[in-house]
Length: 291
Image (cartoon, rainbow, N blue to C red):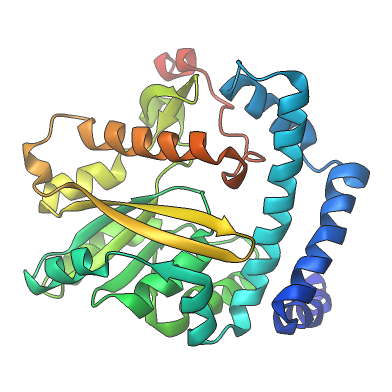
C-alpha cells in the first residue's frame, strides 16, 4: 500500500510529460537499467543467444542494448497511456484493416484474437477499441498487488475496452454469446509443461497454451492474428490478419502452430521489440513427461 502511494505521483508525473520529455527520461532509465542495475541481463543475453545462434557475441550485445531501450520506452508508454487522449491514442498507434473486424461484426460473428508480447500491446487495446465496431475483451491475469491492479485496470479499460480474468474466460464468453465481441489473448506466455503443446519456437523447445484454440473450436469463432509494428519511437501500426474462418475444420494444434509461426516471423524481422527479459524457456520438454 505505502509503495503504491509513494509511486503514484511519480507515475502520473511521467504520464503528463510531453512525448519528447518522456523519451528523454526513458534514455536515462535505459542507462541505469542496462549499464548500472543490469536488470535480468543474464536472462536477456541467454534468450537472445539461444534464439539466434547464427549471431556473433557482438551482435547479441547490440541487440540486447536495443531491447533495453525498447523495454524502457514500453514501460513509460504504459504510464503515458493513463492520461492519453483519444487523438493521441490513434495518432501513436494506427489501426489498419478495420474492415476485417467490422465485416465479422456485421456477420454477427465473435472473434478470437491472438497476439504476442511484441510491439506495444497496451496501446493496441485502445487503438482497437477506437477503430472497430467490435467490443474488445482482453483476457488477462490479475496482478498480485491490488492497488497497482486497479491502476492497470483503469488504464486498460480506457475508451471502452473490457477485461476478463483468465479463470472467468469460458463463463464470460458464454454470457456474451448473443453479443459478438473480440476476445484477445496474449498467447506467448509460459504454461506448465504437462499442460502445454510443445513445438520449436525461436530455435528452442517451447511450451504453449492451447486455451485460445480450444475456445475457437468450441464456439467456431474466427481466429485473427494481430501484428503490432513499431514504425519508429513512439509510433506503432497494427495489422489484423484472418488466420482461420472456421476453426472446427482445423486439425489439433493447427491454430496454435500457425499463430506461433506468424509471431516468430515478425520477431525475426524486429527482434528487439519482443519481451526477452521474461524467463520464457524455464521448462524443458522432458518435464512434460513427469506428473
